[in-house]
Image 1 (cartoon, rainbow, N blue to C red):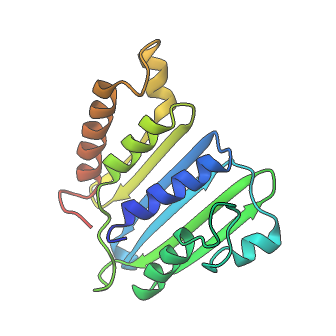
Image 2: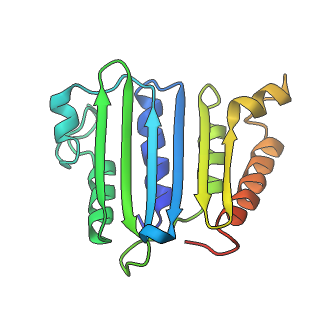
Amino acid sequence: MVELSLHVLDLIENSVEAGAKTVRVSVRESPDENAIHLSIEDDGKGMDPDLAARVTDPFVTTRTTRKVGLGIPLLKQVAEASGGELRVSSEKGKGTTVVARFCRDHIDRPPLGDMAATIAVALATNPGSRFVYHQEGPGGAFEFDSAAVAEVLGDVPVTDPAVVQWVKQYLRERIEQAQGGGSF
């Protein structure tokens, strides 16, 4: 995957498949640390300690339709290739958290990509789930919560194309502002 946003979309889908009702995605650019921190946290079924310890192995998966699981191993590879790291913590019955750190100025760090589209697609394809997106950067911080949007919409579904388009545009504007007008 050439953009971090695609890794995030993959992990969001893992979370939803694991029964998560709420998925929290956080992106924090820290120029002082020369780092970008990425976190995906869910309240899904979680993993036992043995599986959580082996989940970065591409030949470990809980899916029965195939014998490999590449999402987390590929994200780990990208993080490490850019001078960073990846940690997975999980508790059975409580959820899973994946945290990746990337060296901000490393030549092998992929761009963040279109996080606005990623969150909008996740919302449109999983209307029963709550998505919270937080981003911090040199231009400030903001948080988007799909539950607040759903409350304002009332009977209008979050899957309505006009709503999805609005969410995408709203997020793009806030992300650009948090990035301080630049992009990472």
